[in-house]
Amino acid sequence: MIVNHDDPEREYEYAVEKVNHLAAENNWHAISMKKDWERVLDLKKMNKQLRTFLAILGLLTIVWAAEVDTAGAADFQPLMGRWQRTDAGYVIEISRIDADGNMAAGYFNPRPINVSQALASMQKSYIKVEVELRDTGYPGSRYTLIYDQPKDRLIGFYYHAVSGQNFDVVFVRQK
Image 1: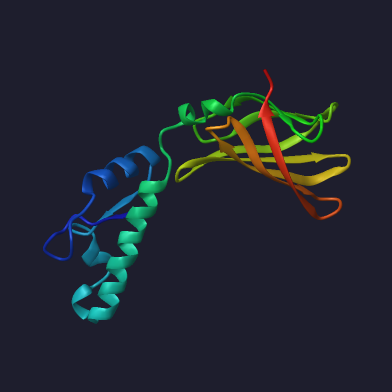
Image 2: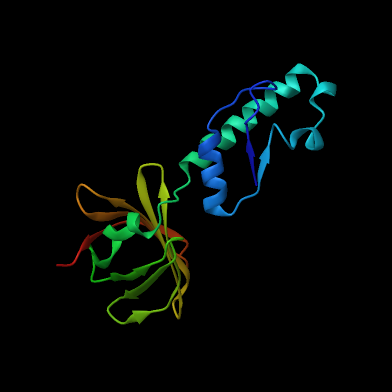
């Protein structure tokens, strides 16, 4: 659900087309300030401070929605391929990335380890990668990585579930 601030007489009108586009693209229900808001809240009975708070909350919602990535899998294409950890022979292989960021990924040390979840997401100006391992000796161990585009590498940390420790890691693309 998203609030569309489309009533310049009641408040401000801003980003109307952007909100409509985001709502349609993400299958969100858009609440119109102009058409629906009287049913949601009776602004005439509210004090000015509460109206101001709700306006700021609505603006923050718009800003957040504008930062949500809706471009799809094409943004994740640089992640495709085999990545080797620089301090060991561990490899993450990314063979498919869906538009919602779900990835088909394998992990090898060098034997295959079960990947229970692999996700990519856009975070403002960078791509975040999360890979969770669930196998013997890997009870929920997790990589949390950022794609460093200028150096074509994945950097971040590895949470070793057995020891409860985090390790800084770097993966480079295998040629």
